[in-house]
Image 1 (cartoon, each protein chain N blue to C red):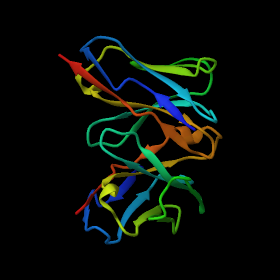
Image 2: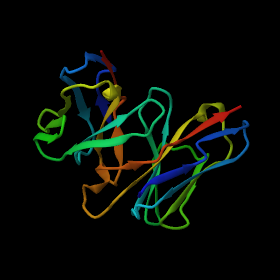
Image 3: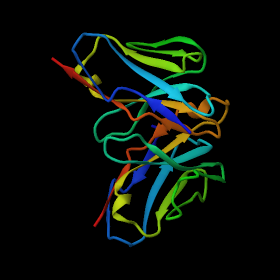
Image 4: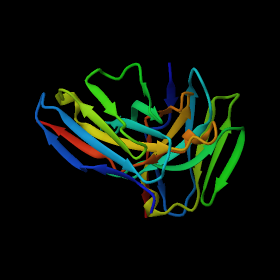
Length: 109
Length: 116
């Protein structure tokens, strides 16, 4: 079976740094991705880690440790527009992604 | 701009009345996906096409069918919608030039289905 766990909700203030963790148990593993979804909107791709380590894309970074079945998304210099749901997703083969249940980030002024 | 388009954005149907949702893409991607997303939940993959090769998820109900007449278009048919099928339906695409390409998926805006 496939299981991804992430916190349901995180709150932070503008300008702060926040980390959203994701642990996974999957029968196959072909990388960890992160998606952002604003209320009423479509998910948009943020980052992808196939190998252990840190990937940086502007204010967002993503980390993967395959030995720990663990990854995180790091958001720096938080802005109000970052308020959204963030999903981790594991590539499980056959071109399929399994999504976590999502973390709702609320950025406060 | 290259994109994924879904029509309609909002669809209301009656219990048991067949409904079809549409998706088109100008990205020329080989792979197209249909997801179901209920409120405050993760997108759940229903099935995907790799070119014309149809791949159904094991737990997708038979009530859900799909057609892909060409590279650009894909349809989701719900044969007899039940109240539990009310959800957002998301279409997505991905490239297939690398084994890892499908980890980056491009989503349409979704169709919100209401079942009365």
